[in-house]
Length: 294
Image 1 (cartoon, rainbow, N blue to C red):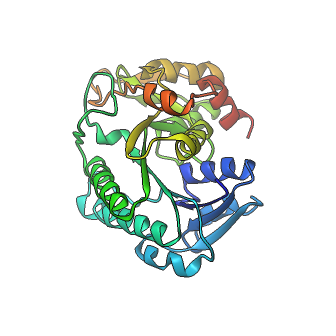
Image 2 (spheres, rainbow, N blue to C red):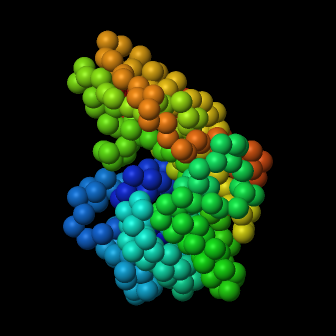
């Protein structure tokens, strides 16, 4: 890859991707929302050029970008977990991103899906499973998968879908368990959490970015790939490890009446087989990098 486009470039996963691409001296055209405070995350990356364009206007990208690109990474998404009216437009925007990619000469379209497409299942999640989402977000992601794949086939562009599980790391927003718990622990406080008996899988954000790059370079067109750590374990194990690292004296209160339905047990055999990618950063290292070395 020499010149790529990244939508959602200033978001959590997008900013991590831009940082990794920048390290490889790949020219990045970062599609961002004008005046977003998150854009500051990209301003010191020498190989990254920010281009203002909201999702509603992706058809204008060919007018805003001079010259052709080889790969289009589509990470942008506006959501409200279980609000179908809010989630549905993302399907349309994803198709518009494919059409913009074709006009800009891109040969590959790499988009991010979600573990939410699988729904609430309690067995190992492999890419050949039929989606069974239990909320509007997962349903919209699944719809975007099929619509974008078909549009890429029509426009003769390689299509790859990276189904992301639970990322944590640099720029993770508040309102998510790892960030909220870390902030509490660093303040010497505990937290009330669910029973945390379900299996979970956490992947460091920079490893997630490297997975997307590996898929762009070596992934097979027309395929779906899980992007996860693959070393899943009960959520309580992760939480207790965070407590040990950040504040041993804090108390975690587990609500045994609150047992979540979703259990994450992803297989990463397929992405490893096709690209050779595997996670490099342990959970302990990732937590230290994110919250102690910042």
